[in-house]
Length: 290
Image 1 (tube, rainbow, N blue to C red):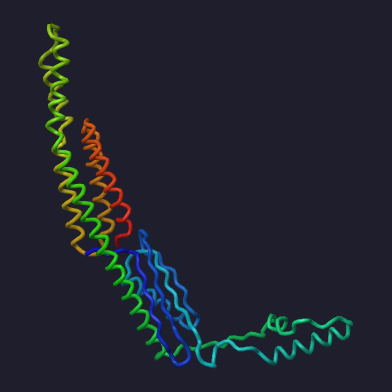
Image 2: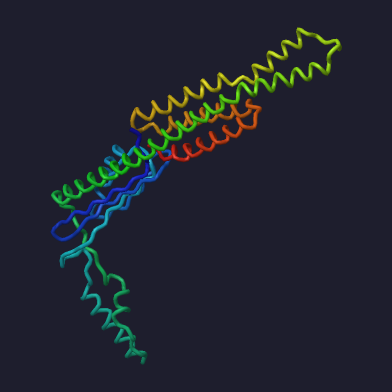
């Protein structure tokens, strides 16, 4: 069963003083394009986090984020009251000495001063990390499950499109006898026009054989059927087949194009256009296969 590169996973876990939310988003990409947003307290574990993501996700444009919401009274960010009092005294003294008006909004001014907001350097507790690591693994598992569900939908779509192309190929066959009869009639009419004229019959027969072979589409139909079967078989090999399916889709397109150029029949060409439309819809979605 194939998997989609698109996915989403989110897990929130609660610790004594905070909630930690792990969120992973994935879109299609030719390789793994990983970006991370990790709070400073977990920065030392970044390589371990990346290793988990690389091992499980393989390909895609992946955005990984950890968010912290403090729910207790103790937070790593504190207001430095001593610094505020110091700035207040200095500003008031300067204003008095220079006969200047005092600020209208003391609080807003003082909170913008350097060193008023201080963040304590936190050390990561290993027991806390084990809880966060578990949340990361669960978020990855959710994303993988999402990818599998999307992959099932894509596989059903591809099977439908493959069968549509196969059906249209069968419709093309209905016009082959009619097409050949028209070609023979046109050739016979042209021969009647040159009746009695001298020409190289051997060369003429060689040209006729070449012309008929050039219009024959049996090889294209056989190769197209083989490519369609190969596409279905490749999907059943499991995930990680996206690039291969893209190559097979290109080969399918080549055979359909050749079929169109050889058809020389309006109704056949209409079916070929429908086949191209079905294939283009497939190729758009193949880009999203892992």
